[in-house]
Amino acid sequence: MKKIAFILLISCSFIISTSAQSTRPWQGKKCAVVITYDDAYDQHLDNAIPVLDSLGLKATFYITAFSTSMQNRMNEWKKLPLKGHELGNHTLNHPCVGGPGRDWVKPEYDLSKYTVQRMLDETRMTNLFLRALDGKTRRTFAYTCGDMKIGDSSFIEPMKKDFVAARAVRNQMHKINEIDLYNVDCYMVNGETGPQLIEWAKKAMETNSLLVVLFHGVNGGNSLNVSLEAHSQFLHFLKKNEKDIWIAPMITVADYIKKYQSNQIKTTKR
Ligand SMILES: [Zn+2]
Image (cartoon, rainbow, N blue to C red; front, top):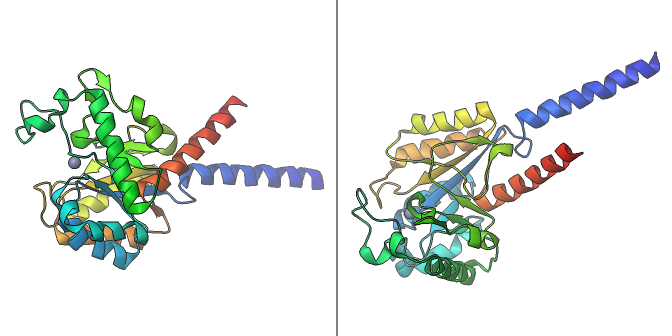
């Protein structure tokens, strides 16, 4: 009788731990949220950082190295990693594929006119620049305008050893074992209200997914903007729900996903 009770106890605890793993796979939390800011605008330093720091939330800033803000305020950008934020690579000059509907692309930075080697050189130069700012050798990348190819050639393949992960621009969220680390999807903010942004986080909690949010302007800087109020409401919601939401920079979350997925593969092979 004692033996049966023992076996029952063991199998119950196994079921509990397995189900806990599937509903709280993110460091024991329901979902993960990565907050990202692209292109290095003054408004990130002036409007986003104060809110993040007051709440103790850590974010990823995808830096275009030769941006105006970096040229003018490099010393302030340099302080971000000291507070736990990540400086990610968003190229040297922000090249994008030009053409119809892409009038803002300058001919000299039209990605379709680049060679893969030029893209590799400029991106690696940006890694070197960022290393001079924060001393780090491991980094994540964000595709400019979501462009992943030059003609038919993918440039991330030869760059995989330079990056832990790469963020794309596609409005989707996925469970931990479904994520492609070199094509991490994200929700791009374009005028959403606080409650609308909060809905995204609630969906991530319900589906045990990774939500990556992409901000450009924060009360200015870019026409893809968010108001101060909506930005603040969203970050406060994340903070309030920290027991269920794991909030961390991309590189931390990417490392965790990599480890999780390789363990999963080992388990499946056995
Ligand atoms: Zn960009």
